[in-house]
Length: 544
Image 1 (cartoon, helix red, strand yellow):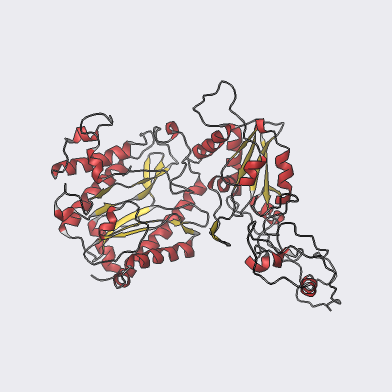
Image 2: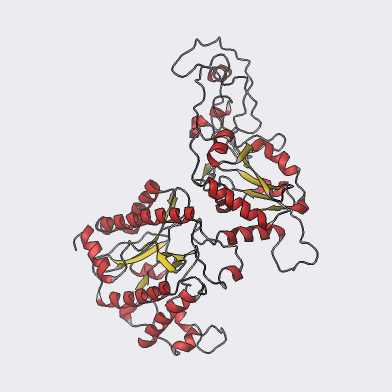
């Protein structure tokens, strides 16, 4: 539920707290069929006064002009019937239904409450763009803020799904113009009826949610917490059952855990959406290559490249899946360089770590390290070839039945061997690769390659974060998993343990890899990786 709901008498987000209902309906006198006009009635100033606080947080002052009585009465009449927002069935509907059923089997006797969350304040009365909660979206496909999914156990041993959403804020209520989330302010949105038809799920108005939550027994209810404060407050957290491990997750934590673990395996719909996100990402990288000369003319050209990719993400998808990393020169040695405010200089490398989030909210996560001039120098090529060989070793290790850590181990062996051959390791390769943290020399290669090689990918860039180690990091790979393979080498500009010519060079190569029944498939293989292919690609779009 939204924080805008009044405590005394809840009203749906977007209609304004305590908004009085109007007597005008779609069939009321004064509303004309489409294409016709009506004679306006004499304006009465006795109309009920709508609350004009809609869209403001508690205690926030309004500097808006108060609507006059004559204006309110005039706004209540003379509108055509509401536009029908019904659409075709969303392709995700049957997949979401299967996912809900699968989750229900984990908790057959419990009611499950999964909210999506609401708008979050950016500054004062401006909000960040809303993005649905990933678990909620995986179960519903619903994009609306403040929505809440209830899965209620039934006598058949299954769960009945009910999705609570805000109804339309159209001309049938004064909130359409008094509330900053009304249709006059932000445009029409689907309501209860339209959402039910599109997603093939029973929907009810959000105003009914407090009553529904009040009927739940805390001892037989699990809530996905931390997304909606009012839902958290409405359903008390229940202590662990006697005899359960004290160090284990709470009952609610077990729900979050189960959702992450179920999302580890992608269905056909998810794989197709990831492929769309990757294809858009490839287009965005290509446009960054085209724009490099323009970026090089600016003092903060990294921002130009960041904006170039963001434009592609907004045109082809929902947004970027995470803050784009555009790291040129020695900025590439900072693992997550999100400032993107440096220059783009010929002769330097540009490390671009970016991904488009598709309209279905699945994100790509791809990294390429490119020579800004269009050609690698000898020392840049030397480092790049080692990282490329490490990545290829990691990709080759991706197969069903392999340990999740096998791609990392394969990549690190290549990197540790190269660092040893260059005389940079104060230990031999086997000592450095030891997984015993107390072993002499263990892990010294990580000075130059700090991060792990892989993470799961899906609706979140670091997907399935609540999964247990035994189902993720310590588990075997299974067909349907999608993970990144992204080794890197980073020689800090102030690192006196490396030769001067290596200082300030950072290289990372990352691709999105699907585990298949007989091996793996690189979803982002359309983006060049080898030195020769990259240089040819860059010449193709802007001659050196």
